Length: 410
Image (cartoon, rainbow, N blue to C red; front, top):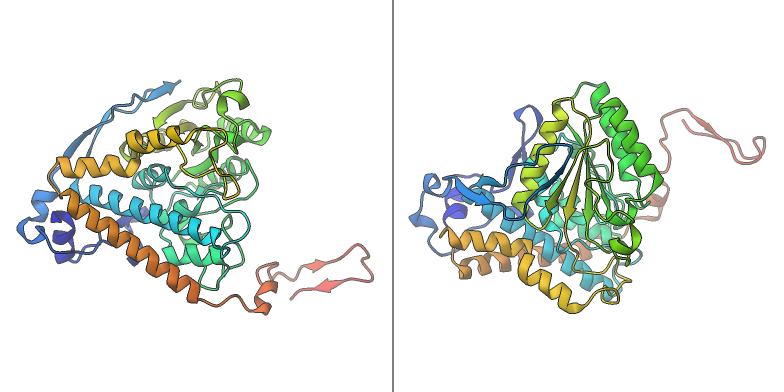
């Protein structure tokens, strides 16, 4: 493949990122592209990195603001990055589905396959200095913030190699260094917590924006409206991202919301409806929203029109409130990976067979990460008592009877 081979010969990672202050942030090795036999040696980086125009066919719909442009540019490097990362995310979620059905993953588990364009396109417009908080469908968001597949899968399996040492599970992943604040199991909490992150940015005079993600099923909660009112009053730098996959926990938006749109439901906050199945539309919209916030205009809301292929959680077959034909129709017409695949082949950057080989490599990498995760031991019993309270605060804690159950932590 031209771009992959050329960049690897130059020693450049396909998935490097630039953070705040020009600091280079590299994606994990598990996601870096590998070369294979083909046409790689016959092309130069200059040829592969020429700007490639991309039209965004689904119009942006805007409320109280100008819409983003309906066109953008990409490059061969970015196309292969998008293709590879979304394939790794897809394979990781499919592997998680199998592990759950085999009884190796327990408890709640919400899969993201079908929605990869939102996570990947969003990160393409942000840096890891921009705080991100989401709800419980979070595996791919966490991966996009620089985690490894092993850290995700091992956490799902309850193993020491997991990002929370096997104690958090599917809904409680966290990456402080890259400003990823979860993974929150309580429905509707990202908007108020994200508003707090935005307040911190404003208070500390940071040149960044906070991003708070939530689903269509939680959009009617009171705490969401309260948080948005506060953000608008104080003109906080926050992008509210509602991932509208249309069915909440199994009830369609038409039955659950009196007003079917989400981007225009808050009169005093501007909003944009985005084709959430297009990584290019997401990237353009998030960049537009970030620019809006950094100009001191306050919050903005993005509605990502997306679709989940699995049910709400692993306990939901996902076929009782929608037809299998509908699911297959979305896969056939709007699949986010297929969109990038078509553009790569159209531009002559790789053949369908070469992309198939790359997809197989992604699957092999995920399979290797699953084996590594399964080999990791379970947490020691003593680990159950760590990370409950900080032990260096000198705070005194009491039970119901102050005199009988006093505990001093030093």
